[in-house]
Amino acid sequence: MNEQTKDLSRREFFKAGTVLAGGVAIASSLAPYDGLLFAAESPGAKGKWYGIGIDINRCIGCGRCANACKLENNVPKDRFYFRSWVEQYTIKNDGSILVESPNGGIDGFKQSVPDKEIFKSFFVPKMCNHCAKSPCTQVCPVGATFETEEGIVLVDENYCIGCRYCVQACPYGCRYIHPEKGTVDKCTLCFHRLKKGLQPACFEICPTEARIFGDLNDPGSKINYFLKNHTCMVVKPHLNTGSKLFYNALSPEIR
Amino acid sequence: MPQHIKRLIGVFAVFILLFLVMRQVLKPSSFGELGHFRARAIYENTLRPMHYTVADSCTRCHKAIRKDKDSGFHKKLKCEVCHGPGLKHSLYADQFKNKELPDSLILYKPGERKDCTLCHQINAARVKILFDTINNTMVHQVDVMSHNLDDPKAKDAPKCIECHNPHQP
Image 1 (cartoon, chains in turn blue, purple):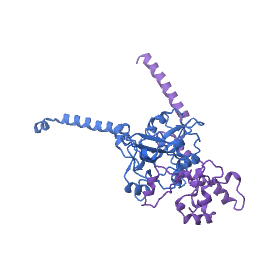
Image 2 (cartoon, chains in turn red, brown):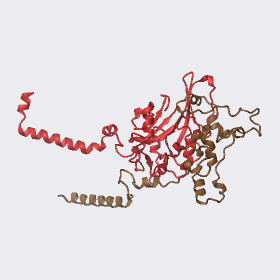
Image 3 (cartoon, helix red, strand yellow):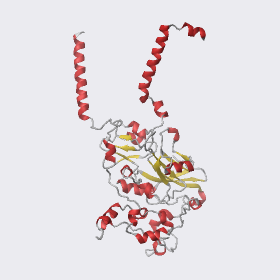
Image 4 (cartoon, each protein chain N blue to C red):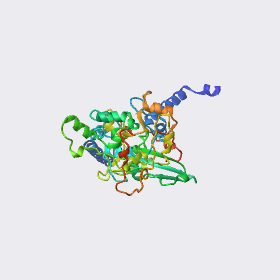
């Protein structure tokens, strides 16, 4: 070791130093494009950073959230277009899983499996997870969908070309192509209501307060209280989407 | 420098200039201000019309119902859960205090059995709510389609609201 250090001439020292400094400079200029750094960083460090909590134990599957979402946001009434919907998971005694969502739960649920065959059953309200590292915004070829500073994933209707790439990219199935506009449509967390200081329609309407919404950066917010008091989990955590929709009592069957 | 290289440089310069001019013309004005998107789209997203209001805008006028509801099991329920979005209804009422509401603004009055099934129809996934006593949330579960009913297809089947007051159940 000592011998090597001694042998390093002044010229070699400057050479090595320059290479090192240049390397650091180049690496830091490339940092914004580094996928690994991107995946590891935690966004939303300042300002408001909205998060959602859903308590599966409290959901009674009335489907009023799905109904309110359609009425508030003029979502087409057909059975294929949902920004927010409810699924009933039924795990039978033989281990098979049945997932039902008749019209997104808007018309109510009918128990299709007799009681004696059911091991357990629960309702799961679904909506956009407003991921911090959204796969859907990353694939947009024209920059028509983006994340705001508050962590809300929005669509620019006037700029979208309707290529459907983001519909495929979303691992939670939360996007659809609007049949009349021909552009993509998704949950905006009722951005128009948020900016007026109101809650999104589905949170406003939930009769059992199973849906909680708030600022993750505010230690006193409802969502932080909910997260502290429950064992919460996101759907598909292995995808590292940075999902901000936290479910209490999330069963591993839920996809 | 050889002649053909000079020409090539000229051709490249023309193409680059053309690209820059076209980019300037085609690029939306607010694109790139906050990222790879039109910054104005954030503002455009706030312009959508609202339909749902907040609960206290109903009880400003419907005071008697509020009194009923505050003492019943439905006290935590917002009016719009059952009656549907009522922003236009309340805005009209605020503006023209003594005028009759036009038909289009009269809200839905649920009364059929199917309206009550949404929450109260017995279902394996709903039963657990009965045990959630921490927050005193209990959703009463009945088989709505056979409760107090001999023939489910009879047209004169009694409605839920004939016995139960929905505002004070």
